Length: 65
Image: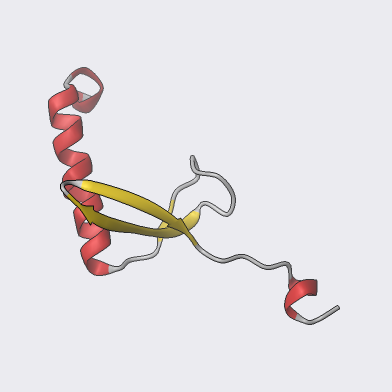
């Protein structure tokens, strides 16, 4: 709740969290992002990050049907 009323703390926490995910190359599940909502956060330098969704294929496509 503190972050809802303190934009500076919210931004600092996002930087910290995004950096940790990017450094660990950890798979992230984020239900508020477009389908599939699973992917990786990559550091792009200068404190910016990009979202890279996981590749998704329907089961039928992956089986060649």
